[in-house]
Length: 220
Image 1 (cartoon, rainbow, N blue to C red):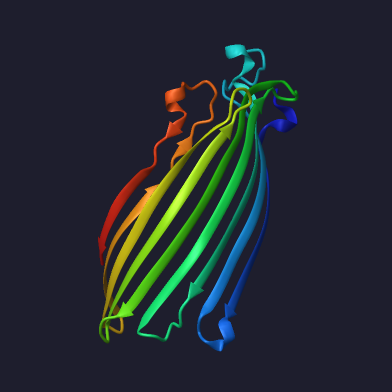
Image 2 (cartoon, rainbow, N blue to C red):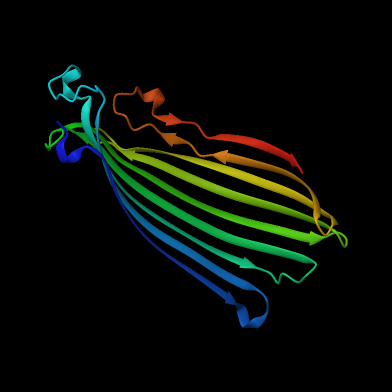
């Protein structure tokens, strides 16, 4: 039986820091946001629903999933004075993650499956320009370039990685019709980075999931 390893146990630790600096009182604001997270989880499960270790499939359906994960992110951004008719933002962003995961027999060190170490590294540069086209009309254009490198160091075999890049724009038009009514339109492109399927039983052609993207159109 699973004993003390039954169910989900999770421990998260987070630390974050934020700094805002109005440079010389000029209205140009430099902002730094950073964070670090560690996460450990253990999930004991009986997928046979029999509560008995002596079962089919080589006892692999009664198991404990272990995951250890570390994440770091940081962003540096410069904003121009907000009182100007034309305003702007420029910035850089960085993120990294490593995730170790494996599956073992309950109350034992015997490994059922070692999923290795997944790694993710993302960096991006971004900017935005916003301007008042009239007393009640505001336009904004934004652009972000991002690069994601995802890799896997398997429990057995050679490590591998893949890199995905994306350019995601967004355009917004706001019209303040009355004090209580805003009419707006948004055209934007979003993306979902590629992914690694770390299950060692999968064939090579299913190891990576391709990046996905979509255009969004909204009026409200």
